[in-house]
Length: 56
Image 1 (cartoon, rainbow, N blue to C red):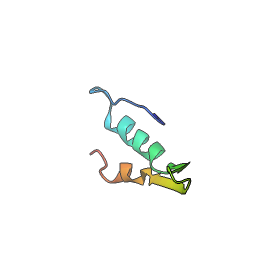
Image 2: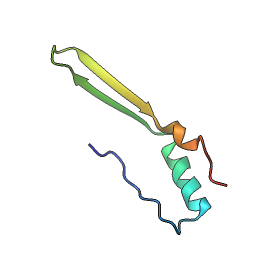
Image 3: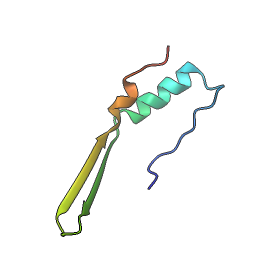
Image 4: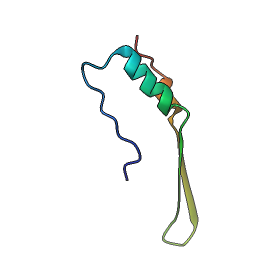
C-alpha cells in the first residue's frame, strides 16, 4: 500500500527538499491488523527520521 509518494527531481532546490522533509517529519503511520491466529498486530512508523540529514 502506498501512503505517500513524492519524487525529488534533480532541479529541486535545497529549500524545496528541506520543505518536504519538514512536512513529512511530524507524520506517524499506524497500521492495525490481525495475524493468522486472530491476534491483534500493530505496526507504527514515525517519519521524523526524514530530518536526520538536512540538505546543505
